[in-house]
View 1: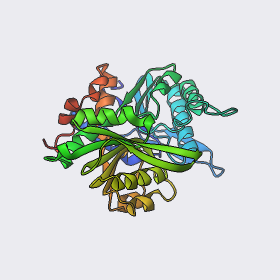
View 2: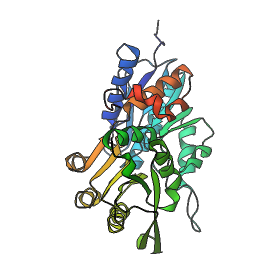
View 3: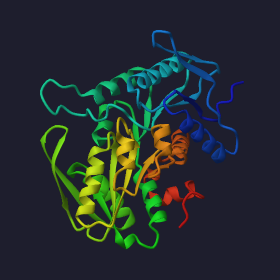
View 4: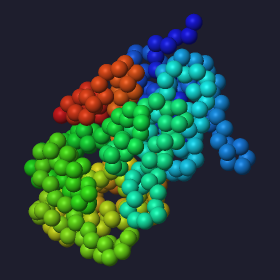
Length: 338
């Protein structure tokens, strides 16, 4: 008889180390070994995705762990094809755990004759047979409404709050949280509230798209340790420029906390040579060798949070409890101390 007493995990190729780390954390929680379902996700010679699941998944509660990070199209197709394979193998329920949801930056029509790609991808995911989503820091909260299936959007802010309290212990009164633009104020305010610090904003004005004409600081940062907070860092141009503006405005040091380290093109080189003392990212996107070698980039694990989120989803208990820093303290025990 098939043992359906445990959730089952399967992973694409986007972030295998994170998938294995989630399985290890779940093993600690459950007191029994949780491993990834044996499968192969490969390519035909022409680049088409091929999936074969080697274990029986009939009637199982399946969780696909797959970010849609670079190469975004390949990893998105892996997610859809794995879901189709599981659906046709009679899995009872399929949940997509998407630590980084790509195409989220195209969430509205900013000019004529442009797509809303986030909605298109949401339709594709639901059509593939996926019944719910567990993700982290969507670029825009309204993307949850693009899905006709349940979406649980976890937040990095509670984990970042633990990290800030640990690394800035004894000098939180000198810390100011900074939003790199007006659109990210809500995210920065949330972290500032959690750690009890002041808030400032870097206001940027563009002459034309992709070109920053002017940056000004709204708020007092003189003599402060500034922490820039954002959800995505791509080429790091804006981030490094914001750090320079803060130093010019009198900040003693600048650190950045970014959820998704896309870090494409010259990003790592820019960060290494910037005035920023540190950039903290999560492992929602598998770090490259250049990222791991960078002296001022540090990675915060998300496996403890995702493992608990998967268990709560499987058991039918609250996922929103993971929005609270206090809830995450025992989950991240050993990593951060009060």
